[in-house]
Length: 205
Image (cartoon, rainbow, N blue to C red):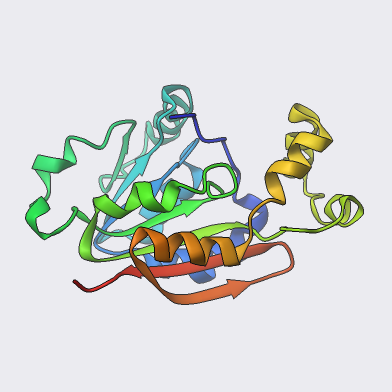
C-alpha cells in the first residue's frame, strides 16, 4: 500500500467544520490521516467520541504523535495497522467496529479508499469523503483554482504535469460510483468551486 500524502486542511477549515466535524460518530476512523492535523481537530471538537487516525506511513504518523504529545487528548489514537481493532472494540459478525469514517484528500490519490474503509464500518456505518472536484478542467483552469499555498507546494514538489494529472482524473461522480460498487448508498453530496464532499452509508442486507 502506498503512503498517503500529508495534506493540510487549513485552507478548507470552514468546510471542514461545517460538514466534517458534525459527521463524527461515537467510534470514528480518520483514514489516511497523514500528519494528524484534521484528526486532532476532530478529537478536540468531539470529546465524547473516540477518534482513530490511521495512516500506513510511519513517518507521517510520527509527526502526528508529536502533535499529540503534551496534550490531554484522551480520545485520540494514531495507528498504522488497524488489525488490533478486530478484537478490541467489536464483533465482525455484525460488520466492522467503527460507526463512522472520513477520508480527507485521499480519494484523488487512492480511489480504492472507499472499498478499503468498508469492512471496518459497522453494518450501519457511515462514510464521508472530502476531496478535489477538478475532473476535466483545463490546465489553465487548474492553474487558476489550484493556487493556495499548500497546493502550490505540491506542484513545486512533484511538477505541474504530474500534479495536474493526479488532481483532475476523479470527481464527485466517480466517488458516488465507487461508493455504490463498494456497497454504500449515497446519502448526500456537496459540491464547491474545487472540492466535493460525499456522504454514504452501508446498504442494508
